[in-house]
Amino acid sequence: MMTQYATFTLNDRIFGIEIQLVREIIKAFEITPVPRATKHIRGLINLRGQVVTIMDLGVRLGSPPKEITSQSNIIILKTTATSNDILGLLVDSIADVVEEDAASAEPPPANVTDSGNRFLAGVINGRTGLIVLLKLEDILNES
Image (tube, rainbow, N blue to C red):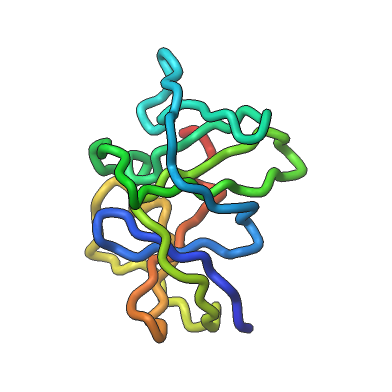
């Protein structure tokens, strides 16, 4: 079955999440820090009158925090039935929306051992290169 993925970069790797989980993509702008938040919560933004929590996806996957640049973007996720909180993912840059066969995804390599790998769903060798698919539900769960 063909699935569309929103792709983006983090630390020079291309990642993807299913497009139906994305509400919108915006340029990164002033993020207000939240005292005593977990290290991967970058802070809050005001998006057209709604407070949005911003997760630094790179930090969540085990990288050190990076400076926000003109290429940085925030992927605003759709809310779920279990949570009305609006969440955004801070990424290095946005790539393309690609359509790939979800059945062609291979499991993450067994020799990949960094701390963020529990969040990897698989890898697709697509027309645009390797796309690392993320387990968004695990990324969003606080553990």
